[in-house]
Every structure is written in C-alpha cells, then in structure tokens.
Length: 468
Image (cartoon, rainbow, N blue to C red; front, side, top):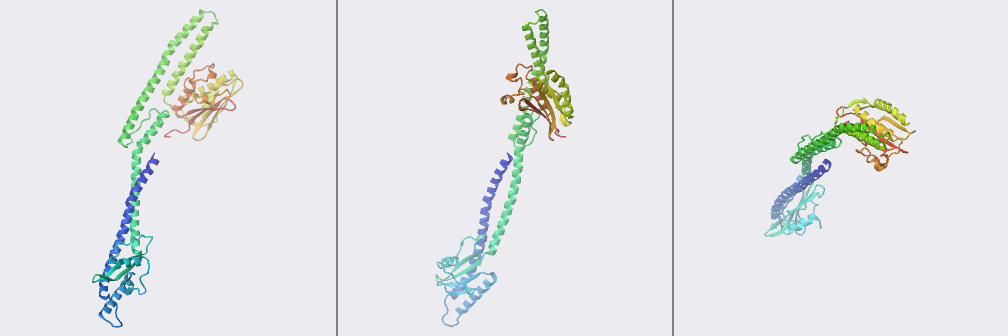
C-alpha cells in the first residue's frame, strides 16, 4: 500500500511545486528584463534630450554651435558604447545618421531593430520588448523618439547584449530550482513520515491477522499510533480476536468434556453388551455388529479427545534429531507392517529441527498408520528424512490405491474418509490430529500423488526458531 500511496503524494507535491515554481521563474525573468529595459529607456531619453539640439543637418562646411553639440553627442555615444558594449545611435526619420557608435552601425531594412525604430517614429517608446530567455535572444533593442515642436525628428536606438541579463536570469532560476529541490526533499521526508504514521497500524494489523490465520490465536494488535480511526480499528480487532478465541476455547472444551464424559457410559454399555452376549448363542451376528459399532464409537471418542488436546496444547519446541526420532517410529511400526506383509523402509539420516518431539512422534504415528492401512500385501511404505537448509522434511510414500485430485483437496478434514475406503477401520480424525500437532510447532503437512499409484505425505518442520 505504501508503494501505491507514496508516488501519489509525490506526484501531487511535485505538481504543486511546479505550479508555484514556473510562474516564479517567469516573473523573475520578466523582472530582470524590465530592469534592463528601464535602464535603457533612461539612457535613450538622455541621448534624445541631447539630440534635440542637433536635430538639423549641418549645411555646407560651416561649423556652428549645432555641429559642436553634434560632436558632443557622438562623443557621448562612443564613450557609452566603449564602457557598456551597447550599440547606440541617433537616426533621422529617413534612416540618416545623426550620430552612432560604432560608426558602421545602421538601421537594417527588417528585423527587431527596424521594428523598434518604426515604433519610435510613431512617438512611442519601446516599453515591452519580447521576453528574453536564457537560451535565446542575445540582443535587446530599445528605441525612443526625439521630439521637437511636437514632431518626431529622429530616433535614439540602443542594441544591448543580453549575456549578463540571461546569466542573472539563469542564476535566479538555479536558486529557485535549488529551493524547489529542497522543498521536494522536505516534502518527500514529510510524505514518508506521513505514510509511515498512517500505515504502521495497518502493517501491524496485517501481521497479526496473518499470525492468527496460521494458528497463533493469542496474537494481538499492539498499540502502534496512527490515525484515531485505525487505533479504534485495532481495538475492535483485538476485541473480535478475544471473542473468537473464547468461542474456540469453549468449543474445544466442549469436545474434550463431551468425549471424556461419553467414554464412561460407553464403557459401561459395552460391558453390558458382553454380559448380554453370554446369554445368547455363540456367533450371534447382531451382537457382533453391536460390538463392532461400540468399539468404533469408543475409537472416535478417543480421537476426538486427542484432537481437542492437540488443538489446545502449546508446543514444547526443542532442538531435536528428527532422523533419530523418525527411525524410532519406523522401528515401532515394523511389527505391524510385517503382520500385514508390507515392507516398511526408512532412510533417516541425522538432521536437526525445532520440534515438539512428542507431537511429531504422534503425527508420524498417524501418517505411518494411515499408509500401512491402505498399502496392499507385498507392497512397501518408504519413510525418508531430508533437509534443505531452511526446513527439514519427512516424506512418507505408500503404494496403495491413492486418491483422486478432488479427494486430495479434502484429505485431512475432520471425519472425512474416501468413499472407496469406508470399509477400512478408522475415524477420519488421524490426519486432522497430525495437522493440529504440527501446526502448533510451526510445521505443516501436505499430500500429493505418488506415481504410479499411492499417496505421498510430506511433513515439514522448521530448522530454526524465531528469536534463536
């Protein structure tokens, strides 16, 4: 969720910063240009005031006061061009030169200088030239009219290089860019803190939900701050988990108590059946059927009690050599396999894992017993221990009839038995008990086909324990 929420916040903040930064950059460029334009207008106005007194062309070779003032104007323009590198000139209406610097600078027939010159001829100063950007326009033209007796008699034109102005604009933009980057970094840090603050309770809730889903019913959501709504959700979740755990505990207690309480009446009933059988002819089929059903019911009650205890008990995890433990279980079941004419083979190299030895032994007993039940005479059951670094596995394979794909999805459910195996002794709880015992210690059990026929059961236990 954070990877989806954080880019959204970053894009939003970047859009806001760009919306502020772009107009600010444009305003900075406009302010820098306006400053230069105002300065050039002041210069052209000064030159125009000087040119008012030399507006007439000199006649012949007569040197007059007007010509002297014209020489003064030309000297001013040369000094101005030399100091500032700005081309400047005063031109008559017909493009004739009154004074200019450099001396070869004239008004072209077209272009920006001509446009400014023509505008000044209409008695308008250059007040809003096209904007200069750092990557374009290396000249800036400003023109002012020379007016005498209400008429425009000449035009003062300046053609300024824009290198320094563009450098100042670029420098200002760099400052704005640095500020934008700094603001973006601050915003990113704030977004990280905000998303962390908002999503921390969600992560804790997700982890706790996963723990409960995998069997750790005592897990609860710890106080993790965050928005008030998520804190209320965490409290509500804990209350729900408490209620669910209480209901499950009541169910388990009921199953355990019912199983325990029914055993005594059932034992008494079986005893009375045995006494009644003494009064009937030997080999009575009804009595035999009642005995069989009574023993089956007793077996179911015993398995129900074992299942309730397995689901309720906490695992006593210890570092155990599961190879040795598995070899002991194989040896214990070997006489049963021999009686059935089934070969029970074990490959049990030494390997360690964190397990509850009693729980793992009980689970292996249920799995091996189930394999021997469904393996026909003359076939074999193999038990193999292996390790892959992260976990250790105990694989039990048989050569029985196996299960269909649909049946594989149901194997291990409580009281479930395959339709083709209803005549085989069992309560349908053995593999459920195995799963409960393994889950309490962080283990698992999985079922798959064994080619060409049979069932493969894989018991997986962890080689490491949390906090170790």
